[in-house]
Each structure stands twice: as C-alpha cells, then as structure tokens.
Length: 135
Image (cartoon, rainbow, N blue to C red; front, side):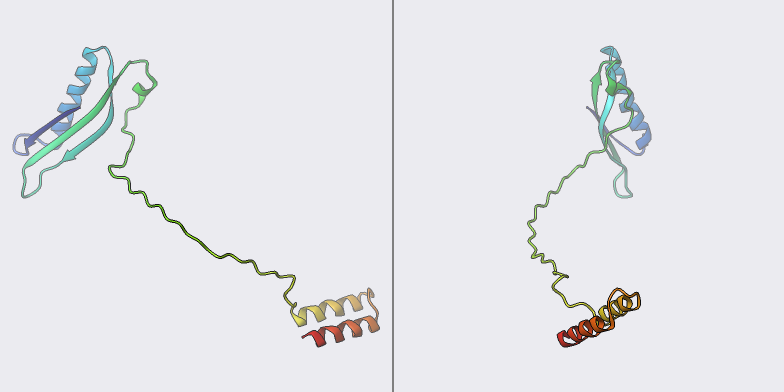
C-alpha cells in the first residue's frame, strides 16, 4: 500500500494519484512482477480544507498470473449491512371446486348442451331445477 497527503496548493488529486500508482508500479517492476489494484481511497480538498489524500492498495503478482491482465479494481463494499428477518405468513388456498359456480354460466352451459342435442329437454329441465334450488 502506498499513501500520501498534500495540500491543493502544490498538487491536484489527479497528480497525486498518478505519482502513487507510478510508485507502486516501479516497486513491482523492481521485483520483476506487476502491481494489480485492490482498492483506493481518496479525499479531495474542500472549500474549508486544502488537504488532499490518496491511498492505493495493490498486490504484486507474476507477469504470467491471470490476475495481471485485470486493470480495474473489483468493486467491494466498504460496509456490509446484513439484515436477517423471519417472516411468517398464513397462506391458504381457496378450494375453487367447492365454491358454487356462477348460476348464469351453469345455465348457459346446460342450454348449450341441449341445443347440441347432448341432453334432452327433460334432462335440461331437471338440471336447471337442481341449480335453481341450490342457489
């Protein structure tokens, strides 16, 4: 990890970042390896504070390591909030077969069966009477 702090008067945040990342790369090169980024933390100047800070965490790996091809930082959360909650619910399914059917629909079906000749007029009247008594 490399980090630095300076004032806005002498450097910009971009210059500070470039300098520190360059130092990390030079260090890794001196070992015959490459530096891959892990995380960064920066604080830019504000109207009330002219101090800028940059922290660069890196890992040194062999040039042939598959991680060496990664050039971007893998996003990781600074803070993880875990909420465990138990929810209970009373789920009941309505039994649609036990529910009386719509009278109009049933009468229409019966009439259709009669018109197609599937049931006789007498059977139609008997079924119709049962439906009307039930409802």
